[in-house]
Image (cartoon, rainbow, N blue to C red; front, side):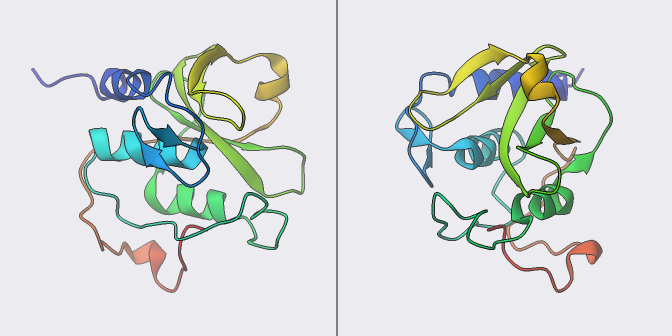
Length: 160
């Protein structure tokens, strides 16, 4: 019997708890930002990253990168309905703004995320966060090798 994919995602995300926040980093126990956490969990449960984000400033979204995080999520993750264990949550601070934060759900009411000034932690998802969910995704069920180009990706640029 193969392991439950959602349980594998949650276990890998929990292994990152306590990792200090570090902008653009993605190294368990050393440092990561929210995207770095997502990238690290991807490597742990799916395999090599299919795309590298390239350098990005802390204010990348305000600096005109467009909705790069949401575009990348729809490019490499599987859109699904409902918050459940193992799902990736993408957040938008306000309607009309680009998505700027991501986390991994550990159940319908909790998530693991990295944010500036804190270590990776598991927290409840209060109404404040629920209102900001812009997309819910699952990890793909099979590895996508580095450099894999899916048909929907033709002509799209890097993550950020």
